[in-house]
Amino acid sequence: MSHRTPPSLQYLAMQSLLSNQALAISALEDLPVLLFPSMFVEVYTRSHTEMLKGLVQAWPFSCLPLGDLDESPDMETLNAVLAGLDLLLAKKERPSRWKLQVLDLRNEHPKIWIQGYPSMARISYPDVLNDKPTENCGSLTTEEQPLILLMDLTIKHGTQDAFQGHMLQWARERGERVQLCSRKLRILSGSFSEIQKSLRVVRLESIQELKVNKFWHRETMKKVAPYQSQMKNLRILQFSRMRLNVTCRHKNFSYSYKYAVHLAQLHHLQELYVHDVFFLYGRLPTILRNLTLLKTLSLSSCPLKEADLCFLSQCPCSRQLKHLRLRSLPLGNFSPEPLRVLLEHAAGTLETLALEDCAITDSQLLCMLPALSQCFQLSFFSFYGNHISISVLQCLLSHTARLDCLRQGFYPAPLECYTPHERWVEDFEPERFAQVQARLEQSLRDMGTTQKFQICIDFCHLHKYWTFYTLGPDGYWVVTVENLPGLSALPL
Image (cartoon, rainbow, N blue to C red; front, side, top):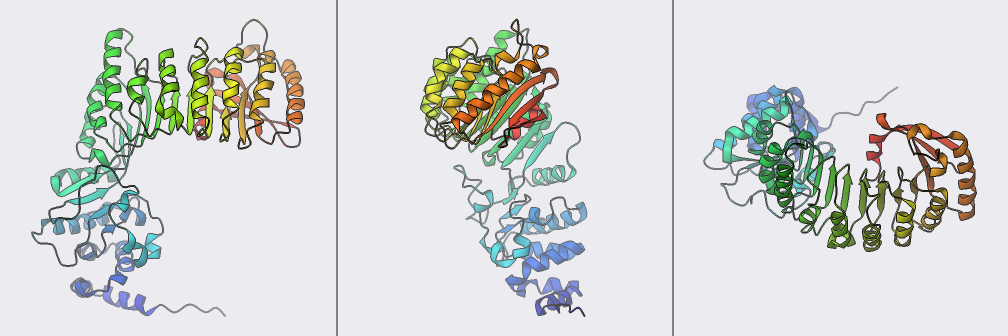
């Protein structure tokens, strides 16, 4: 025989109150603060719009974390919440119990509505931003202070998300009475008019993470740059794909210089990821000179001057880098000295290192090895896509085997696996590779290393698929095929 837990007296009292909405609304002034979270969940779930308006106006906490209750509310219920806020904002004098300062539409406290009153009472501004910004989104100490609206934004080309578009329009129409703060902003559009429409509403200094992933032309870059330089608290910048005008080289260099100057104003930047852009060429010193807090740097498929690499090796931020990825950069004709110095300076802090598909040769790697062997914090190392012989690969393995923290390594198939004339994909010879495997197995046994060792073979470079040969603990090679973009899931 099953026994059902009887409903609590608190639940029964709440149900009795909700049976008469008019009475419930009039009783909100005297409703115990303890009951507000559970009452709000019940009313919100049932879509009691009038009751919702009243609850919002009487909300006794500094933050209403609506995003943790429903990431995509229906418009009728959302509009009831906004109508309650409008009634508050329209009042000349604040109600005695009005403490609401922030409407949080993000999903930052997923269990808060279950935990109820104790957790709800602990949320306060600026804790809702997860990080105290150096430039405040405004002080909340005066009665004239606007309502803070917190939501992460994605600017897409064409049809926008209905919920996001609705909130942007709501904030835009209320002007100074509402401040929209967005910690994370993604720009997936190349249309400046679409970008500007959103950026004019957002409090730019609230943005801490910016991701740009769309083909931009020079004019778009030029117009967005002033907005970007106002993102004074930006911590993370990911920038992918910038089209180069091959007929106007002097304008390319002029625009890249101006954009680099704007990037240099982001003094709090800690992570910089740049892929497939033209504006780094000769501009890395301008960008990095003031980035004293930089911990992560990832550059891929970007043209660089040797002077850029030289500056990076000497830059103060190189002594505190934790994560470094240089991928698909033509370093084969560069002097190995800048890379050696860079590793030497970062040896005490570097945790992940990727030098991938950079055409690094035997002589360059041998120059870098003494510095690499001093990177004792290194836990991940990737070196696939480079042109080295098996003897130098064995030398590399003997150095990385000394790194006690290293748990995973990606290495290229050595030159001996290919026909002698040119190292094209179709020249890979399985018979040669079998001989190489046997030599590597013996070398790794002699070293007694416990790191995960993987050889990367590029069978289909045009389609960006790589074959991985992994030497397992039982001494057998495991073969897998993965899509190259999936490597972004690795530590960098």
